[in-house]
Length: 138
Image: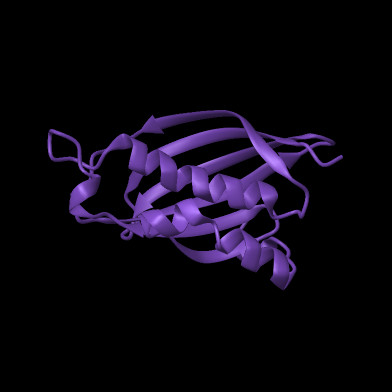
């Protein structure tokens, strides 16, 4: 499915999600947000590296988690993470811009299943996360 296959969401919900203080603190930018879909970017900064000089895995995870949180809450019902498993596929330069694209794979009555791909701007794979969300609002 392409991004345009996901339905638009209400403007007030989009605005509320995009005001996430943690995402703002990291410098994450929302590129697209739809029902069950989110695409965000992050330009890595010097303070985001580990002692080896590579981008810290927790920063990459945080970017994936922001995309997941936005995608699973884009239905307008509160959802929380039950499980997130991430595989780091390749190292990137400390000044790279990363893109995380979250897609809903299946939404049941309460459980939602999501896949988040993290890539460089050029599309090189960086990480892949599989996530399960639980809707608490029903």
